[in-house]
Length: 320
Length: 145
Figure 1 (cartoon, rainbow over the protein chains, first blue to last red):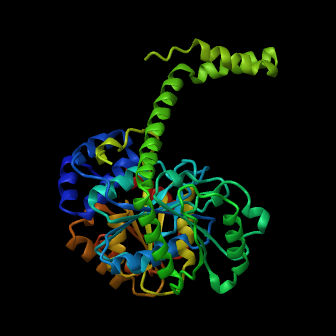
Figure 2: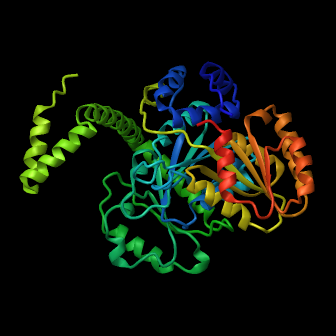
Figure 3: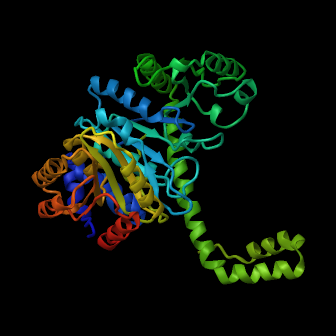
């Protein structure tokens, strides 16, 4: 058994709103990205009109449950919502247990929702390499809102910052003290901070985030709000939606939305360029070459390693 | 921004196709262990499992299509395996996508019901005592990567 992917036929069905075709095209750009240009060339006349929300936070803070709650509200407003949920792939087997969809069963049959689960497949920063391409397919499909839910992250996975316009950082009661709040990384990227599972407490966490946010300067004029929610009972979700709308309005009025869109393009551009360079380097520095260099390093002593690497790069001709 | 969507898409060859499996529990019998254990074995064999949990028939079919899975695994311990499986297969046929999926049934299924399930279009049935290794190998033998 093997699935067939006829791009022209799929694009035609995609343009008629066929979700089956959308699903197949997502698989195509995820599995065979070299064919993506063939897909995207059909969308020259489509534009970037979706509003993109990024949800991030540690494992188990409620990202999928909040996504479900937010989406329910957006559907009531008549919006079409595309959801991308990323879960980690195993570095050992390459397999993944994608368990986000199970939190969104109640919205899954709505005709205006499309949910896709992705394994991170070794990609960095709490995302999958396919995330941006999938979000582009959602845009071309005509989604009003796209929600990207990251892998459960730690302190330093914040690639989502480059791919979404409003970033929601989720925390839970017992998150950490004032010292944790001052650390760089994940707690710098939020446009909205949410302490979820408020039924378990968490007023102290919210207060400490608030204090932390007071210590920073906000050149764009947006001081991130902090709120508390219970995603299961939908407590605080109305407020969260209001903040998302406020932030979108802020981005549009201050024209920073264009900066955000530029960042998204720049991210992809750098990604494509570094991939090309990596490919070129792999043809020059082959496994045999690595073997030879390693032997040389061992023979000459490890303190020569910088000189050896310097010489390698001196000899590479990048005029390709 | 004036740029169109085609300017940004694709161009990176770093991914590899994975076998994707939807693991679902039609109905509401609370026996999750089997589905979880099998999911874990498939995950450890390098597959991507979309864990559906409790889903009704329409939700199972919809998730299988949206997630573009290769395999639909139905974990049933309620005794209603014949009815649920038939409903899933009927809906897949109605949508014209039955041929796209390998359908497997597992759980408390007595051996005398195996032929009826296979007659409906189920590729294989795994009752009590089945080995996860056999499930992995069966899927790998049926799905071309």
